[in-house]
Amino acid sequence: MTKYDYIEKITQNLEHLTKDELKDVSILTTAQLGVRSKFAERQQLEHEIANLTPQLQHQALPVVPEFIGKLINTFGTPEDGKYINYSASHLENQKELDWIDNHQKTWLTALLFGFRVEKPQLFYLRDELTGQFLAKDNRFKDKDRYFFWTGEDPLTHSIGTAWKLSFTQQEIDSMETGSYELVPVEDGE
Image 1 (cartoon, rainbow, N blue to C red):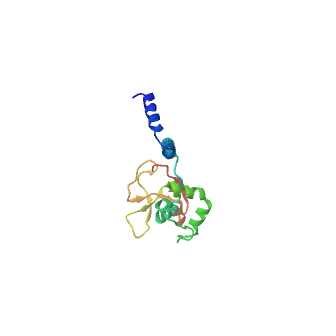
Image 2: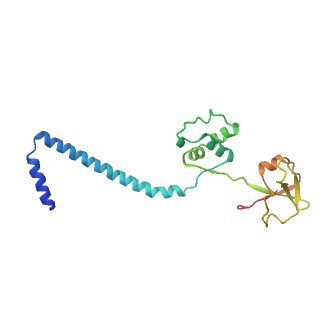
Image 3: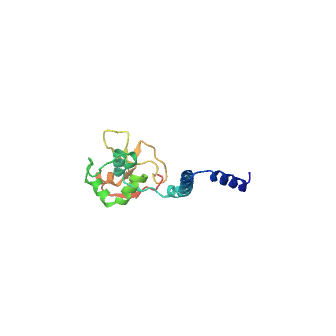
């Protein structure tokens, strides 16, 4: 059946309809066009989303301090279906509220899209007089035992797990380090 034959057949069928039936046909035709239009819009939106998704995935997630990462993981996010009033929740200390107040954009982005936890800068402590490195013996779990490292240079050799030679600034601040030079640990170590 050609296009013209099809139109002729529809026209013949429409001639036999009453006014009310023609109104119904008009309403149904309009509704069908509306559905087709919505379907086309949806397909267009899905296509646009598919094109934008890789761009969004390439954007870096915000970096938050470890204590903020723990807070989000503990209380959840709005996406988890939870409504949380973080300011009224039990917070470890004022530090969390202060960070949230001072980093609102990062905070909201982390809640909505996810986050990465900031890796603290690590340092070796080298004695300024002898050049030896301070080391903590990890085999003593109940006490902090520090020694001078006399093994391979940790700047050029991998050290096992029995000894800890790199420390965060917070760990260093809690020790009485004396006259040690802070040597930054390079990424990947």
